[in-house]
Length: 68
Image (cartoon, rainbow, N blue to C red):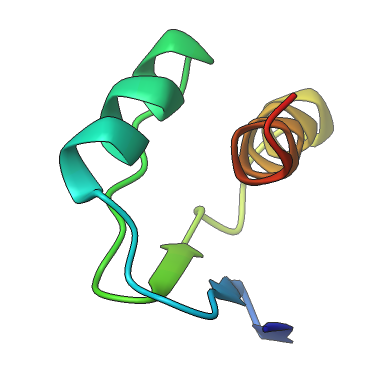
């Protein structure tokens, strides 16, 4: 539905609420710990996150949500 960034917070808003447990399982399989909240998938990484770690988070979100 939409993607937003404000400061260090990144949000992907989904059209409908997903199966939360399935989504969490897929994120873990992708190597990240991200917990969706309703229709929102968000990350709040530290300001000192390394570029490769941030890339890992964003790749996982894209991959899981796009079904890759």
